Amino acid sequence: MEEHHRTTHSRQLHTRCGRAIRVARFAPHELPAGMGRVVLDTLRAPYDDREVWASLTPGEARQLAGLLLSEAEAVESRTPGSEPHLAVVPLHGDACEVRVRGHALTIDQPVADGGQDTGPTPVELFVASVAACVAHYAGRYLDRHGLDRGALRVTADHTMAADRPARVAALTVDVDVPELPPAKARALEAVASHCTVKNTLEHPPAITVRLRDDGRAPRPAGGSAADADRPHR
Image (cartoon, rainbow, N blue to C red):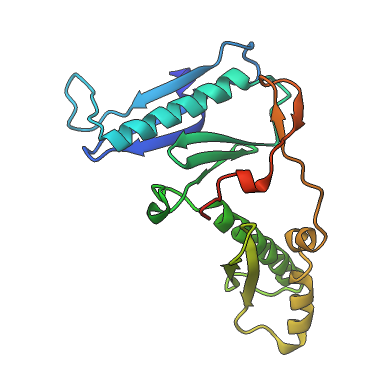
């Protein structure tokens, strides 16, 4: 079916009973507003005869509901040419989905902090963005100098502050390039140390968090940080 092949943001839920359930969105840009659809596809298995069914645990049911609701919200809010650069929608429990230019990332909390550990935490993603940016700059440097980036490895670790407000107190990024010519080491370190994300942290941007009135005009968020729930990670 044509609709099946033109769906976007496809996600799959694999149940304990062995079933794969696919949730996707059918909302091509040329489709008139209000005509988008959420697609639920219970994929047929080799042992299926006539009926296709799925048995869900309560947790799986909540996860499926979250996927359906997030796709419904995306279809309803889609206006051709006006999609935000980045959007975050809830999935289930603490889990949410980050959407960027057609890519989807699942964010969650560890089980010990009340989540289901279906993805990294926001702080882990923040640390990853620094490490990935360093890796990008290092990789480009190696390419420019005819060196193999295949062995490049970037690792990162962070420490949370012991006091309020909740924040990352320290972040260390290690760049490992086996067989790097010693004459290139200082230059590579200098290039990697000036990646865009690190530059942004060293020269912090103005950040504004706004509340929207019924999805219309945004307004600055009120209240103090002391009134907010302290994030886990």
